[in-house]
Image (cartoon, rainbow, N blue to C red; front, side):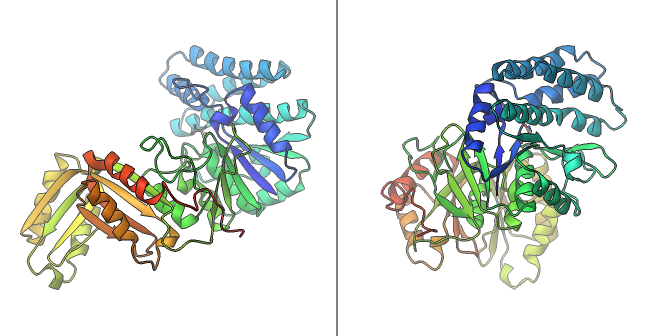
Length: 463
Ligand code: ASP
């Protein structure tokens, strides 16, 4: 059985929903379909979830929400008309909205969740109706009846332990296509509660794990995940055909990737292969994310990069002999609520790489003064404007020479490497450079590592 999740852009209009239907019915294994609320149809368009959040906010503020409500209604009505679905579906939209907007406002977070979940609910009801209208047996799955039980953390719910078994029983007992709304479930007390934003991915991953799906297909609007950011290297053609969960984690570290890696955790725990695919180009095989895969020694799979980092530099003579020095340093940062990314260290010095936005001017000076005083350091300084490039690949493990290729390409491009750190898993290497060198560096690395890669776009696992 395959569980497929279609994101907001895949159900943004009637034309998109028709593509979803074609994709699903072209493979009888595609039995569980998770949908988001309608997303943007074009740049500048508004997502239904955002419209609903503004309905809830206006209502909570005691303002008139009529106009926001009408925007939601007319968005669904245009989808309904173009799909040729019966008018009475709109009755459900209007009354559903009115009921939720009139519900208790004692907990604003609970109230907002009730309203914003409606985007997925209506979307799934409309999609189920569209499947039926096209002659395919399909049902709308009510998450409450299906057993999607979640914690009472409104806007950030977690799955309750008894839920997977209930979901599995429900899903396996259905015949035909089950259309499941993403993003929300119910508390034990029967209240609607949502995951964090983008949470339909979580629903899909939970369902894929619950039925031990052969694959979790995550349909979005890109062909695959690319080895470098196509905005920096537009000529990159071949996407990544397959990667391991670990590679995905490392790559998504610096803001890379199509989905939020946390969202697919349930599928990863259950070792379900994840296939990222494009609704608009269903013949493309997309990117497979797998527990394990065959690798080619020395091959780098992808580069992630991001700007917006800074380095906190701390030095103290004989630091290496002082038991607990780094732990005290990190203790101070933890105390101040600052997380770090990496801590390359020398004999008498240590650098803490962190996101610049966390180490704001004003707060920064006070923390640095504290470090100097409490740790009796020789120097504490901070430099912003750092960009980080991560080279990732299982094939980098136990291989000589990858660092040299990267290093060589960067030095030929005239990029000064300020920091280098190899993760202990040996499947990633992190380079710190100046932000202004980022584009130049990524282009140079693309030319060196990917422009002539004979394995680009090839799947090796099934060889
Ligand atoms: N519609 C929700 C959001 O916009 C959830 C999702 O699309 O995954 O965050």
